[in-house]
Length: 267
Image (tube, rainbow, N blue to C red):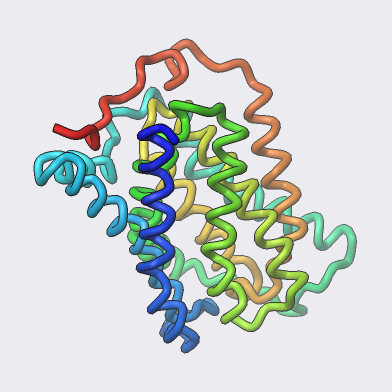
């Protein structure tokens, strides 16, 4: 096993180990308008696990450099990645609602979309997205892309990500069918996020923005996510991910630049 593979394996193992206590005690619902269990606080665990590993491998200076990746807006190449990160998820959720209306899938008779809670929820989701993506993207994806392409990296990381989310999915009282399709959607979203990372100049912030926008789309889906259908949104997410991967990479994208310096290399 290569040094990169060992680093990724250590990150996975530490993330799951640190998440276990929250999974065991986290069945109670959080004081939010959306249905989230306390175990959803594991969102901050990937950043903690990754920071600990970077500190072990590169010391305090390396860890500080790593944490600054959460706001690495200077890496973003142009406006398109930002627009994609902020607008694609709302479009997918809007299309999901239209598809559900077209096929007469269950929707509330009275639609409630509380735009007043939108900004507070988005800021909350930005915090949780930062906690997740510093680990899943800044640490794991950065290393996976040194050995695999977008699809393979996204699939492997997405499967691990879906398994990691399974406990909170179950603790919210969802059916086995819902959990399955939400897991499929989760893998597709991770493939999309890996693509976005590569084509935004290697920006963790761009991925955080999409992650937060996706969570907000779910939270605002009528009513407060109660009628969200992971089969519909998952299918649209996979279509979007595959369509993006079929595009020819731009010369200014992350693929055309040398890999970013690995701040976790031993001194």
